Image 1: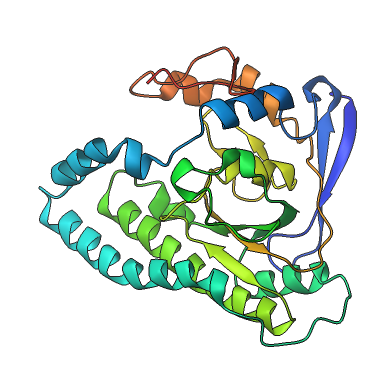
Image 2: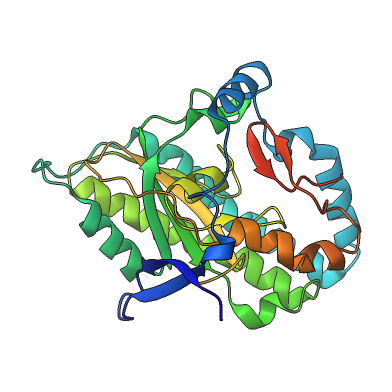
Length: 293
């Protein structure tokens, strides 16, 4: 029988669900969030700022699209998604300049925003300080507001398991669109409370979202390089809204994932390209499993 080191209490998967309590075995305890050397994070941010793969890996993305587009059905899905998604990207880009429609009362609106996000379909919601250390170099001047509302939208289980089937491609694209529409609605709600709200679109990225999700207590960094969250594992689409609303920050949590991944190794063993390392390394100030590619 494993000895429980601590318990984690989290909201239910849906607004109507009761809270869940997660026992974390003592032998899996490490640190809340992820082991971090803040001085190294600051140094890399200053000397070697991150950049989005939309820029650094543009040629590779174009090549992969060409290969995928050899399938007429895949081509139709991509063209349709880009057509529908373009309007959402543009709408998100404009949100930072939209003025509030209401008057702030001075109260902390954390509970109101989390409740509204749940109504709109987000399964995980956490709040933390926006961390400029991770902002992409091409977006350094874009983000306007200090607080980050971290939002995870569930991607349906069954079609996701069919990867690389066309069903998985459909659910992947549609989830991005649905969560963006929900985020735009949430931003409208925040403005009605008297505050600004800037939507950071997941396919027009400003920053890697995972560090802030970890800081907001929504999961920990898995060996597969993705956020592992209590309700969805890695099967969620992530995005953030930055705002100047009066909010209370959540705290990072130790779910036992950091050490569990050292024991499990399933994703490492099953990775077809052998792209995951077995041992953790310190990379840009974070202890993690770094990809070999």
